[in-house]
Image (cartoon, rainbow, N blue to C red):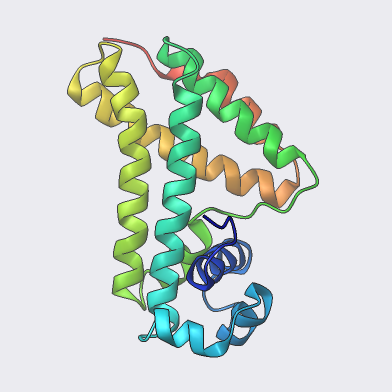
Amino acid sequence: MSSKKSAKDQLIETASRLFRLRGYHGVGLKEIIEESGTAKGSLYHYFPEGKEQLAIAAIEHTKNFVSDKVQEDLAEAADPIQAIQGHIQKLAEELSKDSVFGMPIGTIAGETYLTNEPIRLACQAVFSEWQGLYQEKLSQSGYSEKQAADYALVLIALVEGGILLSITSKSGEALSRIAGQIPLLIKKE
């Protein structure tokens, strides 16, 4: 079995990276084709509906990648507070590196929510899944269903806002500070 990625995977991964960095409207199909190293025909073979269809596949790819990372991080500690703090601190460290990160879904969600319903729905599903990961960790740790759901909503808002603050300041400090506040914010009733 070859480890070489298929043209479809190359297109999705390239689109995912570019959309994270520059948003939906900041990236053209020609650029995705060139950067992915695939033939133009491959794009239209795998994504006959064009850019929107590719964007939805890229959003799904990003969702799966981030979900796997969040699950790994949350599994590192039995205590949900420690697990969530560790997860947010890892994000802070990643954003403190000189690597290019971008908003996982925020950029594309923010610019298309009024103009593209299929992409808006795809982004909504992503945020719901990520929120569900926090909710599941809290529920497994004895938080009531309502508490877990409410705290998960707060967490996704804190993380997404923290990422935005971190990328605009080119520092993970905002996320580190958010991680430090988690014990004060998330308490069992």
